Length: 564
Image (cartoon, rainbow, N blue to C red; front, side, top):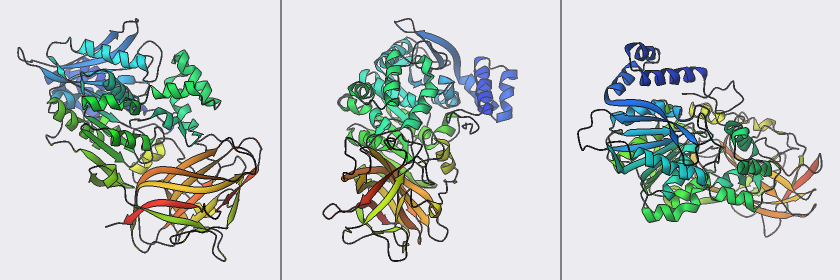
């Protein structure tokens, strides 16, 4: 499965994938030689012929108490012996216009593993009726009704039910498990931990990602409550109503339910995730006390599991099969015990596979690099270890125009290119130093790795009351002036006064990145990135001064160690 880069929607799948999924669906509904034979053009005829021998596929609509009809598909094992039961997995849909059909590629593995499978599209999504509530209380109640319908099917074991979901389906699965203890295991890929942190980071709205999601939801299908929240976020009215809307939809606020029930939870995310907050997923994992596993991969939202949803190999889906087998007693996976703790890839090596017990043992100790003035004859400041460096000032203009430095040129698709070994190249040598300030280390004497949490401290004096800055840490080749992004974070100063110096300390997104010998770490401070919305709007052009006063010297803390 692949996203169609020619479409304006970053989540749009390609026409070939749509055709393939429709052919799969027709072959599952009617496993005749003619229908199954059509799948041969994708090399899938044998897979779905075998599927039809072990399971029966049907499509249905499941009525909710308020009359809403949820579009669903059901796969049940053939020829269960009298009294024999099977585990079951429920698959709430990702946020995509084909809804639960996005999971059709997984059905053969689940079926061959002895599972009953019920996939469904949440209310308002795809062919389901009703309005979209964004994994709200109504969606959680719907999940319970889905389980009620599932356990009525002969042979389904009510004590062996798991939920698997990607993206929107991951959030739905996690929240449902907090309220219905019949859910004995959860696997959530491209999951979220805190919806508010995903929308609003360091006082800055993630409006590009938000608008992409709203477009995918289809605003006309959203509930009145959600439409009101959309307008508030667009107008930067981040009030108690917005916070409460996000709170009830955030798994981090359901920790006691997970921990009291010791619910086994598998989470996956990506280092350059642009939709949901990575630190919030790490925090959720850390605070869970039951069986748990976290996978962090190269790329962006949904990239890691994409092949697995299509029935091919992916780490997230292979881990999910193994996770459900271990906790529910099926055999969809490879028979190995699942990995607990943290599993990760480092950028940009997809073959890397590291294991740690917890985040504390995963993250390296942080080294402090002080932001210093430029050396004689140089235009960029220095990142130096040793003593704090007070007394310098760098000025940048906020003009509403961006520079080469951006979080990602394209949501989702830039990360997908990373997974293909093609990280975006930034020509930091060409960045206008009037629009951004840059600090650089000396070339590294040996290969190094950034692994864990980062933090920046700066003193900012804007000419208007509110202002936004964006910090990017880059891996730069001094021979070419070209770079790749390691991590980033925005920060918005609010409720200040024009001309007032404010010292801010804020985290960057966690990272795991290997730098070659001779490369340089490069910190870029910019004022404009289309990924975010800005407070830099009162005046068409104004200046921000970045300084390092005595006693509050500027620095960046980087979890840095040698690469073996």
